[in-house]
Length: 275
Length: 288
Image (tube, rainbow over all chains, first blue to last red; front, side):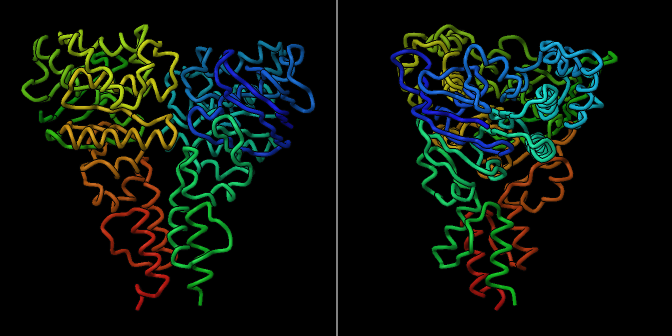
């Protein structure tokens, strides 16, 4: 469980607060997206979750343990991070070395290390690339190796900080599918930092930040209902939302706010065209 | 300046065991003042192609005409003039920024190309305004800025060199939706108001279809096809087969047709035409 208790943060004294009095709770096994435009504070929030940054005011708790100088290394074992740019997170000369790095750091015995490396590479579908150089992989493959490195540490929580934003559509899909698989099979808590509403639609909950404050906390459907108002916080309503709003103006309604075009079309068929 | 590729081949590390042919018999034309998109899966040859456009790479065989310069075989001065006339914006702005301050960064290109720096200094503020940055960034280090701001600095420094052709490699990757839209609008207005030729290299099929007049589709180093956006929407299966994304509106329409038996009569596919067609169909107009 992740808790933010009245958290405020600024990078330097006398500069504006990047996060302002944030209260949040993310339950174990949940998939939560944190949305917001550039500068909304979402990446700062991500770094507070694993103690890369510490709040100026308030507390961040992981499983009821407050992150402090004493607890941070312990907490960090439970919280893995995958960053935006796959180029910036490789240390090893082969995929194998790279996944081994974190395990060596925490002194995992060799036999167990071998098992954990194979297991985590297998989970992300990269076992065949064990002896490859990371630089020769595609963007999506690099990110999957980064996920394997995190997974080998057996975390409870993985934070994906815009992990798909630099990838091509195929790479994006690979990463989302990997996330869904891990979430389901390991009951991992997933925190996804993104500004893509279509991606956020996969999550249980969404938290939208705006200028360092929580603007909305709810389900993806709650968020999609805001329609054109999303532009005020720098987000772009999805195509299905725009189309559904035009339909509503013509008095065609469906039961729930659609989050995918297939949902909308299927509902329209059921309600208006089924004979 | 017109850009013409004639049977261009390019091979990395030729005559070695690592030899790899990235472009195979490429022939295409980019007219002066046009807006084209280059799309293709990772490894399709997009990056190799774009590096040819400002002579960072030259054909291994075949002929490339960039305005009045022909490659290979151009001399040093001609290549320098190409670098000035063809501006390149990289995907990762940190790869092209290096000066201590934004001001020095902006003046670097013009200085290199022998511009009158006093004159350029008077243009700095307008240029910042054009790309949506405030004057206060001039004295800051470009590396203190956010990703979106860095990209704007790289863009401003490119524009100050007064290029005729803008080559943009994934210009909106990593920006938030509002930033993406503003950036694309900016390219559109540069194209319309200043007659820049724009070559947009992207994975984003939605942007390619929305902004480009022609879309060049690359596949494994060859030109798969060159089509207008309204032609390309009929090539769904072909795009899928070569690992490209089908734009969401196109998928939407396909699903409407399959599920509801909608008759598609519009030329463009966008939120307005989709809504209009759906409403018409629901009211029974399409079937009656």
